[in-house]
Image (cartoon, rainbow, N blue to C red; front, side, top):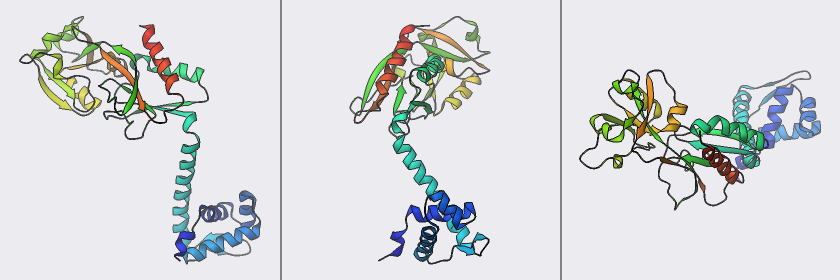
Length: 289
């Protein structure tokens, strides 16, 4: 039988405890074992690995050259194991909400404040991930804020609100001094669009009167292109709330349909706090400005 299969986490914890405490006696106290049990566990680990791990004298304990290498790997493996346990056991005491660009827009800070007040036992994490499902498909979050079409075959969803569109312009753009911009005026400009998660498509304009387009893959690149003055962008109001940047001005866009805002989550085994999050965000959108 391959003796490597006998390696257990308790062997590694024993090695780390001996080195960190400096003695077998103190390691036994820390681990809640007898000193004899600590000695047997270390000998078992050395037998499994086939190397001596510690130099032992009556007064000191120090790792051998091989022991230093094993100790480093042991710390890493124990850390990974502890993280696995933490994630499994705290899954329902932590709520991870993904978003591609702008979280809950102007409601983000208030959502966080009210969540903490109403659900102090469920830690809230906002995660930005620029993919079509804002990290949900990748397993990075428990539910996600989406402003693009929802794949209803794969995900459950709830409409929580809608946002008016605006135009993002360079601050020295001639239109930056206007109160608003009409949708049909944009056909004379070059539009920058996020190809992966942007809410703007050419379907906003009739065929034959559509603007020229440049594509980008990230909010920072999108803003940088607009700041040069060669492009403009169309985006929900949430972007204006979350990304106030020097050199960028936002103006309301007239004659364009609003952008729906959804929460989405995996159909099987939804997070127990999902409906509470839906209710809170829908309430904030319902309160208006």
